[in-house]
Image (cartoon, rainbow, N blue to C red; front, side, top):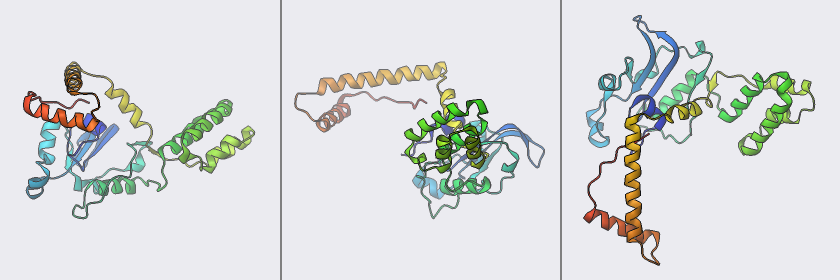
Length: 264
C-alpha cells in the first residue's frame, strides 16, 4: 500500500504519488498576471490505470478539494516557467535515491526528481550534511573559526561519509587563521539547501490542533487495548509468532470493527 511522504501530506493533504509542490517565499506572477505563492503538480486522471492503482484526483479535483489555486498535471512540471536562478536559496527535502523509474510512465517521481535536478544544476555528489557544513563555515565570523573547527571535527566523527572530504579535513587540521580562510575559499557555494527544511517541518508538525489531539488520544486508547489483549493471550513458552497468530484468530472472531484514522 502506498504511503505518502508525511511532510508532503502535511503541506498538501495529497495522498497520491508522483506529485511536486513548489512554495515561494515571495509572490510570483504568471503569464496571465495572476499572483501566486505555490504550485502543485499531480498525476492526471487515467481511467485505465485507475482500474489497477486506485482512483486519482487529477488537477481539477485537487484544486477544488486541496485549496490550491495553481494546480497542474505533473507533465507540466518540465515546462513550468520557473526561473530557479532568480532565487537566493532553493530549499528541498533531501533525496534518498530509492525511487525506481517506471519505463511505462514518462512523468513518474523518478522523472520529476531528474527534471528538478536538471533545472537547479544539482551536483552529482551533493550531500546535505557536507553543504550544510560548507555554509556554516562560510558564514562563521573570523573570531569564531577556531571553535568552528572543533564543531566540524565532531561532525566528521559522527558522519563517516564526510571523513573523505578533503576541504573539511583541511579546515579542521589548519593551524592558523590564514590556513582556515584558504580552506573556506575553496569550498563551493550553492543555492541548493537540502538541510534546512527537514527540521523546520519537524517543528511545524509538532504543533497539534484540538482535532489532531483527539485523534492521537483515540489512537493511544486503541493501542493500549491491543496490548491488554496481547497480555491476556500470552502463555509461558509462546513465541512472538505464536502470539501474533493467536491474536489474529482472536481479533478475527471477537474484536469489534474499528476505523483508524491516520494522524500526523
